[in-house]
Length: 109
Image 1: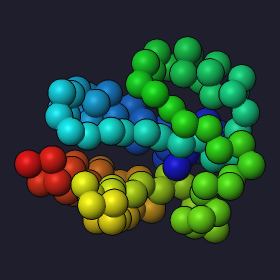
Image 2: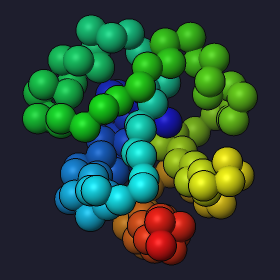
Image 3: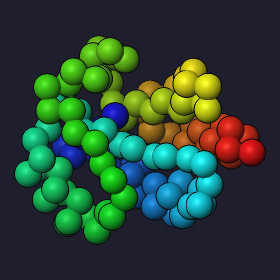
């Protein structure tokens, strides 16, 4: 979960294309950042401005977000092939992002 107004979210998203999308291309893996509390127009303008081409989900009323959390973004959930959450992170730190990438790497093998 993320938002266009969130500096740590924006910082994390700058790493996504190379470190997640490109790295796991063609593998049994889906990455879907879900915008929390924002409308299509806001997210579309942000995507265009940043040059992001990967899919982004919308949760304008925070319906999905509220099932998982009550505060703080970015928030990442890695879900295994069995549908169970295998990793959760809150906020953005390079070390934690690298840990998440390692978890994804193991999960797709």
